[in-house]
Length: 293
Image 1 (cartoon, helix red, strand yellow):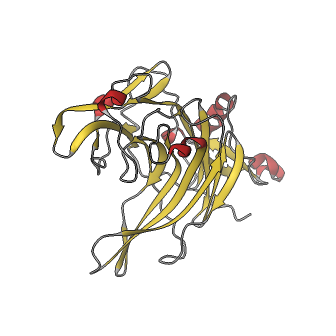
Image 2 (spheres, rainbow, N blue to C red):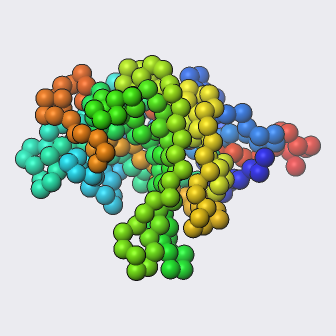
Image 3 (cartoon, helix red, strand yellow):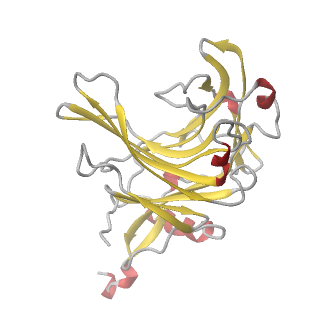
């Protein structure tokens, strides 16, 4: 295996301590020979407090309002009962094309890089998404601007046009391209999915992704390997070479019918629950080499 490492973290000792305390109900895949997984606390949160950790997370998306008709609103977020909760609702008064309050929790750093990332969550029961994904801003390469997007899970628990989506882990890798003089950017996507049970809105599931290197991402459900995706290389030979930010978002889609005001008012249906989010990086296992060398 061609092991790719993020720069050695300054949190190494803390990560080793945390790893023993976090693996009771989930764990990263077995590490390659000669390496161990260490917790990356920058992107790890158990949501055990009463407020969002402002040192780690934005309570909105810093560069995107959301896709109409849902706007990301800080008021949609709550940390309680050991969970991050994003409660969707009617946006009152409406703000232009925005009539629904969705929510976004976004990492304050864009340094998520090679490693393993997982979340334990339960989707809402309405026709909005419950998601766990990564993205970055586009970077210019000659006459092109290229951005990355890694979707670990885009769940919809109450789909109307795609009701079967609640039975699947839906993942994707997007290479976003905008060529000078061509106007709107476009996506070169490489999607994957796996059927899971129970449905995404009826139970908590652990969704994980091992970002192995710039060309390989492996996806896991409840610690079980499901599939491997290789981002499109039409426009760049190593398309996932740059770090990204982590996103936990509820939004509306242009391919799905939005929820009704009655559905949004139903507290038994309108909330996505994130139990925790965790991140790990690979580091050399000094105990596996003679004299730790």
